[in-house]
Image (cartoon, rainbow, N blue to C red; front, side, top):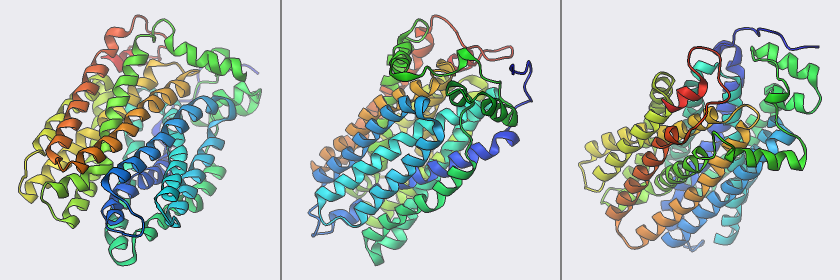
Length: 446
């Protein structure tokens, strides 16, 4: 059987089930990541665990260290084992990690639970991004990515709400028991309804099934040039290809942007309540700031996605990072509570979507056969920033200097803006052109 010359037109309606399932999985990802930041004040006040700001920062870094390993491993293994099985494994892992935290008798066991959660959390994100980039209409890929990532912040808001409602009356442990829900809700739906990548199916020799999935969702039928290489040598070649002509200059810049961006994202997600409390706000108000910044993140994803489809994700990411730096700098001052809520909300609009546009750029820089590997390594190397962010925030909080904390995050935002701005200059060729008057890569580097 030969590929169709012109596949059915791809539309959001056709791929809505894929985006919806990815949305649900990443919702629980965001909930699990933000649960920790939402209950840190309660963990610090629990004498039985023996938490201190320094230890809390270290535990946060163990979480992101697990995410680093999960992202690097999954970004490579998904081309071999498939997207669907690894989505399932990732959700199960962070659900089990949450259960271990809920039952933890001390800091050591708690840290082990967060590390286990990190493995699943880090593994899920690059797969979800790769699936959305593969199935979404090419000219709406950035919007689809932003739409999917609204779920991360909806999950963050849910975690904050659970922390505010449950933790004061029932204790922080019940908040982590809520983190077991993904295994109960999302896994059965993913197993039943999430399609496998046609490219992966084709690489495994399941040609008829690959063509059937491609036809159902309006994708091009895969050919030899569009599928990942198999075997250990193929996986190593996929990593080496990240430094092939046309991408060798962009790859380290994407890594730097992701490092600085994720330092910012996870530093703020972990420490914003404590930074605001150190600035003189009440405990309840400080935790509420986490919900407010995630609400801004949801709006930001939709705005950034539509804007990036028109002007390119590089421009949007760079400008958004600079606006984030301005917001973080403003928060150094003790603002009136209402003004502080507005500044935090607006900063959330820029902060999270700036990092997601790094991913949208990555999805366009690398071709279909290397996209999952490229996203895995950009998110994985970026996780070193996610490891540093919570640790660095803990060190600053331990010294009682909230102003320095906001300044540190502002500097990280400027570094990310500089790195992503240089990606177009590093591009020498424009392979993997998408159909239409403007190539997919051109959209990334405009």
